[in-house]
Amino acid sequence: MIPFIDLAAQQARLKPRIEAAIQRVLTHGLYVMGPEVRAFEEQLAEFGRVKHALSCGNGTDALVLPLMAWGVGHGDAVFCPSFTFAATPEVIPWTGATPVFVDILPDTYNLDPAHLEAAIEAVKARGQLRPRAVIAVDLFGQPADYPRISEICRRHGLKLIADSAQGFGCTLHGDHPIRWADAATTSFFPAKPLGGYGDGGAVLTNDGALWERMDSLRNHGKVVKSDLEGRAFPHDPKYLNMRIGMNSRLDTIQAAILIEKLAVFAEEIEIRQDIARRYAEGLADHVIATPKVIEGGLSVWAQYVIEHHDRDSLATHLKALGVPTAVYYPVPMHRQVPYADFPLGPGGLPVSEVKASTVLALPMHAYLQEKVQDHIIEAVRGFNG
Ligand SMILES: *Cc1c(COP(=O)(O)O)cnc(C)c1O
Image 1 (cartoon, rainbow, N blue to C red):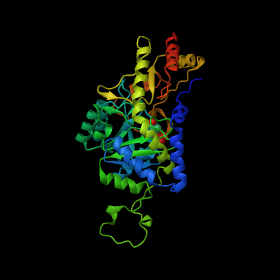
Image 2: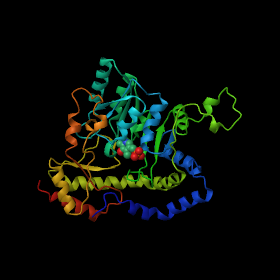
Image 3: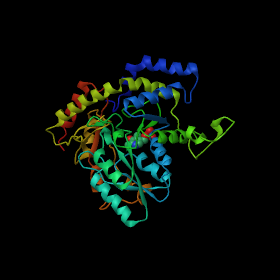
Image 4: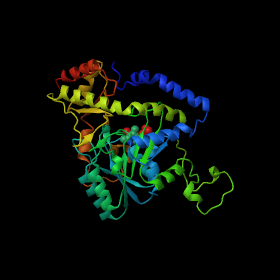
């Protein structure tokens, strides 16, 4: 069987550098918030062309940290897509707020701005919840329609988070999502485009005050510089807690590994473009629908997702030929038991429901060899569904 994501190929390439990086951490022994953590945050901010990056324990905590820092809570509505990974809506009820599910566009799988606006207006008209924030997702690696979404957020006074767990590194007209969002988040789960060797996450922002508050929250609400203004505390400030926070830090070892991976990430994004182009060319005249990217957008191709009305038979056919596939996502979040009672935008989410039955992800990573890819393309073309 061909690997769906070949993490071993990348590891073989980076092995000596990663082993040396891990060894350096074992030598200095600063396993939590060691020097590599700060160094990685600086390099991440530089890569993302943003003022501040804050690392944390995983991509889910990265989503909740800005919500907590803004004081989002009970009685607030946070709008997000339903056709996404569970982490996107999950963090909203953590704060006491209510997720309101919005439909996606049929060609990019990303948030439908017109439906978002309709959902915000419907919530306002009902008067039970206060619209506070939007979480847009860069699904499968491509940027959401940030110019339109951010304009809607501005007009309604809402904060905007870009959930770029799958899309970190993607751009729209050359700019990263953070150009339009108040905070952009990512995940370093191993299978993500920029993955570590364990869990990790980060929040990017141009707002220094937000960064400082999240720095406090990721560390049990520890006192931060602005809290100490005009206050005398003669003890270790580590034990002065100003807010209810959490423990969500990136391990120093993960930061050390990610520094080495970030060094080749731009090149890997380039290679992913070539692989996506080869898929598109190889499958263009087939019955399969190949993915579209928003105009001016650059996807990092976390997934290469095709569509077929008989998706499950296609998957069985491919498996028999040694080609693994995955379904992201078979059940949209608003159809999942714990989320079924949360409100939906007007008219429901028909596009999300159809997509759940047609999408199929093919093997996609920067180390996919041409002959392996040719085999995958031939296998898809050989399906007479
Ligand atoms: C993976 C993912 C997350 C969460 O990341 P973890 O690091 O696994 O917590 C959030 N949102 C989306 C869209 C994801 O794909």
